[in-house]
Each structure stands twice: as C-alpha cells, then as structure tokens.
Length: 267
Length: 267
Image (cartoon, rainbow over all chains, first blue to last red; front, side):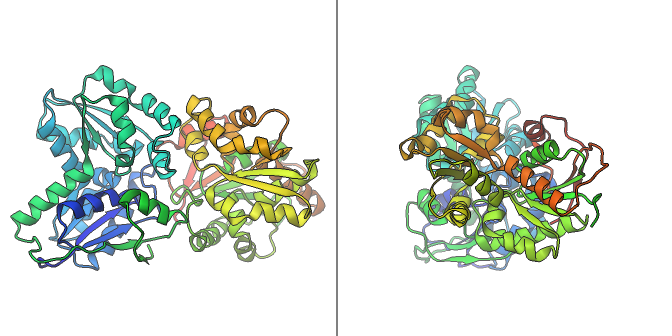
C-alpha cells in the first residue's frame, strides 16, 4: 500500500459512478478502480443474507488491485454489510457512503431535524438514523423510501411531469416535518436533484452522500499520508459483472462523458 | 413423467405468478412448481450471455422435480434463451410465454397490425416480431419498451396519475399506428392492464401472454395424454432464490391470496 495505490470503489451497479465523479473532483491525482455489480443489481430489495454475501464478493474483486482505501458507494451495503467489507479487506481502511453522509448532515443541520431518502432496504435498516444519532442523540431523523427514483433516473425521466408527481407523493410529508436538511441516501438520487430540490423547496439543504464521501476520503488520505503527490488525471478503471444494453447511455448520464474501456469480471 | 407429474414454471422473479394464476384457472387439477429467481431479478437489462446462463440454472432447479412440462414465464428468457431451456431438459416439452402470446395475437388480429410492449431486452431482441412473422409474414408488428411499468406495478401504483402519464408517454404512438391488437409482453403488465386499456382505448384487443400460455399448456397436455384426470386444487409449490422484504405484499398483488410456505434455493 503506497501513495500510488488506487482508490477502490464499489456499488451494486452504476449508481456509484456519482461517487467516482465526486472523488475525481476532490482528488484529481488519484487512480480509481470501480466495480459495479451490474449482473446482480439492484441490491436494495434483496434480503440481508444475500446482500452480505454480495458485499464479500465485491470486496474480494477490488482487493486484487491492492487499493489504499475502499469506498463502499452502495448505501444498501453501507447499511447492512459494512462489517463484512471491513473483515474481508484486512487493514485497508473502509469508507461507507452512509456514515460520510450522516456526518455531513449532522454538521450542517441547525434545527436538529434531518430527512433521509433512500431505497426500501436502506430506509428499513434504519441505518442512517442510527449513524446520525450516534453522532448526536438529540437529532430527529425522518426517513422515506423512494423506490421509483432509481428506475426514473435510469430511464432519463429527469424533468418528466410523472417524476414531479412521484416526487411530490414521496416528499410532501417532509414539509410538515420542518426538516432543515435532506440526505440523498442513494447514489442514483443526485441525478434527480433538481426535481427533489424544487419539490421540497429551497430552504432545505440537500446533502449529497457522494460529495460527503469524497471529502471524507480526502481527509483520510491526508491523515494517513497516503495522498498521491504526483499523479495525473486519469479515466477510472471500470470493472462490471455484466454489460447491460443501456450501459453506455447510463455512463454518460452519470459521468457526463463518453464510456471508456470496460472490463468484464465474473461474480 | 406421468399424468401426476407437476407443471414446472419459472421466471426471473415474481412476475411469472400471473402465469401461475392463469394456469391454475385453466388447469385446476394440476400441481404447479414455481421457481422465481428473486435473487437475480431483473433479467431484462442484462446481457444475452448472462440471461442464457441464468436460463440453464433455472431449468436445472425445476428438473429436480421431474415436471411433465416446463413453462418459461419469463419473456426475456423466452426471447433470448428458449433453446438453452430446451437443451437443458431433454425430452420434457417446453412452452415459452412469448410464442404462446404471439400465436394468440395472430389468431385475434383482423387488420394484421399488432402492437407489442415489453422490457428493453424483450423489445430489442425483436423476438415477438419474429415469432409473429413466422406465423404470418404479412403482419406489421410495432414494438415499444416500457421499462417503468415493472417498478410502477411493484410499487402498487396501479391507479396513480403518474402511471397514467407514463402510460400515455409509452403508448400514445400506438393510436396513430392503427393496431387492433396489443400484446402484454411482460408478465408484470397484467397488473397495470386497466391503465393500459384506458390509455389505448377500447377498440384495441389486449392479449395477456399469461392467459395465452395457460391455454397452450392445456392443449399440449391433452394432445400428449398427460392431463391429470384426478388431481385436486392445491397451492403452488414456491421456490425462490431470495426472499425480498416486499415478497408477501407482492404475492398478494399478483395472486390475490395470502403467501403460502416458500422454499429458498441457492443459485
């Protein structure tokens, strides 16, 4: 493990590319290896046993590249199987998108009322509320599952009136709850950020977990002396377990650039 | 293989339960073994190589029960991997939901203009158009992928205004095309049948592939002398590769009855 070792990032599918983009922006000199488990996406609706098995598999794939840090970009794995990742990678530090998002939300909230949106599994696990209350037990956390946001984002229905109706249905309750901070607890949700912002109103501060995890990674590499002092900007090394038909379109939607070479790995 | 052998049915997930329900209605004296690959659902967006591998796995699981017929309730597998199923099960006859739906649509259409809706993979494979044109080369087939229909059905947004807006967006084109028949080329879509019907208008006849496959199964068992003469109505034997949190709610949505015992199998 040296300053030149890569940063390993994994997610259940393509959503974690929002984390890749945020890490690239915060740490342009670092090499990034990304594994998206596109053959088994989505993890959200699956059982905890299955999610924990997949988390071990995903970690093993990244470990082949001897990363200096592993970022769990998947909120579902961060919520239900972060300990599996930690056990599977020995002394390599692990950063979960969930704890990073929770920490930033706690720093930002002034009225101690934080909203969290995510998949059914993330919300049911109550992991965001636990992480937030470990940092500050006085904070009230109000959670809402938004299962249609991922398919709407992937279908590119960014500004569609149906997306607005569905956002209104999912988010209207937050207005009465008087939250001042809303955590996007799913890596897909930044794609729908504008609709979400317009639905909840401009007074509520949105926390993008992808940005939060990038900041935390920068801190950790600085603290441990592992920041790459002389790297160059490079395209991420992409590993996927399947190459879905819409992959190229989705990559462009998430990264805003053309799809580079992709390596297929078996899970 | 005897008259008392079960009917094996598999699907990528829970959608094939609409086929189970239709087969139960058409053949109440038959035992049904259903495998839903809930750990790896959805197959739709995955690559052909992955779908073909999964099709072999799914067939092997049903073969343990020595079925007298295997019904492929998954449109994606019917479109891209029916030959894999046929090779994997020796002399057991195989019925694909796709060919059954195509055949019924050809029988019903009077103006030789048929619409087909399905997942991205089913539509891109062009398999419905091929199956229809093999039966009648003069028929014009107009296809439309509706990727949001599955998540909308699973979220229970059966009568939601957002579902109507999305149906309008997907289906409006059919009005100009002057089709007289529309095939529901995905086992989830019968759940949204009312919205689909109201959107396309009452002049277009809807073909539910689940009903079509049940009729074809009845024919085949009669022809081969394998109809069970003395069976009793029984609950289907359910096998799944994962038990998602919403399984019980989804079972009720699809079957209209309480979830019976479920057996977990590894894939």
